[in-house]
Amino acid sequence: MFLSDSVRSLRHLQGTLGDGRLHFTVEPGLYALGKPGKQSPVLVTANYKMSFDKLREALPGRDVWILVLDTQGSMSGVPRAREPLERAN
Image (cartoon, rainbow, N blue to C red; front, side, top):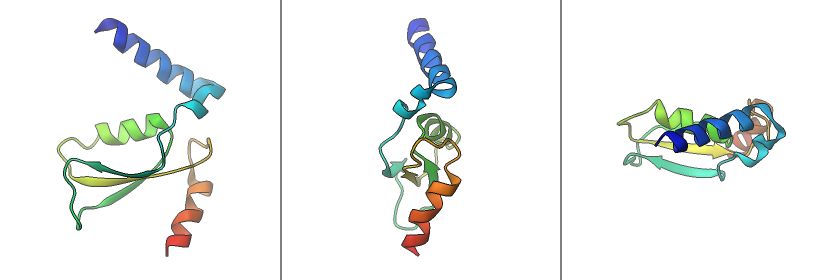
C-alpha cells in the first residue's frame, strides 16, 4: 500500500511541476459520478487529471454528471474551455 501511495504522489508532483502534465489528462467527454439522471447537475472541469480527481473526491455520495473539456494543457482552462460552451448555446 505504501508503494502505491508513494508512486501516486510522485506522479502528481511530476504532473504539477513538469512538462509531463500534458500526459496526465483525462479523455474529454461526459462522465457519471454515482447514478445521475436526466435532472442531475452537470459540473464542468478541465481534462487535467489532478483537477478531475480532486473534483470527484470532493463529491462523495453525489449523483452528478462531469463534463470534461480539452484545455490543451492549460491547467486553468478558462480561455480554451469557453469556446465549446459558447458553441453549445
